[in-house]
Amino acid sequence: MIDIVCSPTPFLIGLLSSSLPRLKELPVEEVSSAATPCCGSVLQMEDEDSILPRKLQAALEHILEQRNELANDKEEGPVNGKQETSPLNEVVSEAFVRFFVEIVGHYSLFLTPTEREERTLQREAFRKSVSSKSLRRFLEVFMETQMFGGFIQERELRKQGVRGLFEVRAQEYLETLPSGEQSGVNRFLKGLGKEPAKPLASQE
Image (cartoon, rainbow, N blue to C red; front, side):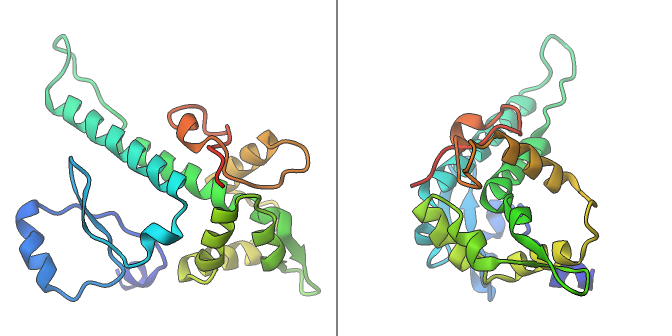
């Protein structure tokens, strides 16, 4: 459990609304809270609205609202006496996979081999390859985080040819980009709920 707590992985945790007064009394850092189903903000990080590209933020809020609608439909009970299983977790996880694929999925294009048979990310070239100005600004901040550092370090040390789900999705995404365009955020909002290989909404 200590390893999990210290990992650079973000956590999505649900609490009862009755716990909110106690939560406000605790020393909470780097946490964003939202009340559902209205999704009204209760507690925000100071700079989250200015750092996260607005269209990406709106797209994530949209898919999370869809998730709440699916949850409400499920609570109403089975249709025609049949039990239906809504893929609620898959809706959320797929949205975030697509989100990160669009942001950093082009990283493999900027991994160069070293003399020790390892690979190093060309960080500045990686960031500047993105056509969207708002996404470049986001990457400038995100690339300094522990989460990004852990993500890239794992892939720098990984043997070439070893691919996980993220690499598969990233490769599918790169193959859909126009010739010469290495990265960018394309059709994110329009692509939600469709095939994951398709690029998302463009960001300026």
